[in-house]
Length: 179
Image 1: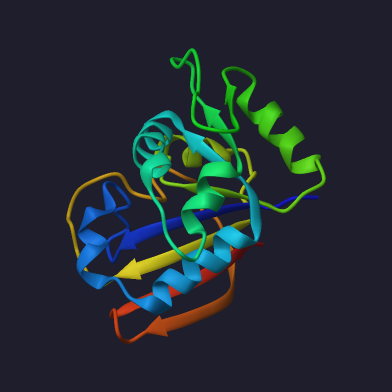
Image 2 (image 1 turned 30 degrees about the vertical axis):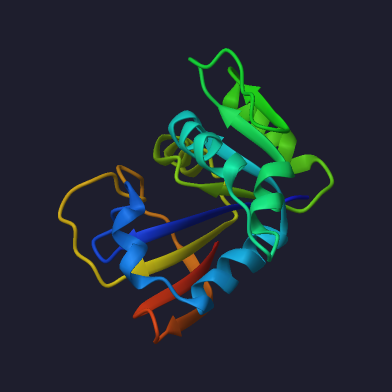
């Protein structure tokens, strides 16, 4: 069975919206974390807003490590009731029966299904117990307002399976599995 892995950049106060505030904290260590995470996945699961942003940016990206090629060529599942088509390479729309369709994806053979951004979609995944793992890069910034990762959810117990500090960026990664 595949795992759904939610991977997010998060401020100290839990904000995940518009992660442009993360740019000053970039590091090679962080890049490796994100590359390894992407390498362990064979699909992206995205909400409409994140999909549109990624689809506008990634096709023109190039890098020697192959991150952009992986992003552009892997399978993408887009949850949207308003999009009529998804043109980015290997993109497939999920327009209805979202929980059922994502549950079916988890049952298929393959590697991790990676979720980035997609705040509204993540709330649906959380409420329907579809998230297997959270990978959070926590930044030393308090934003005060914005979309939060854990917004309006019931108490959920998580198990810490790994954490690592990235001193060069002043950032900490946490990996939690659902209990």
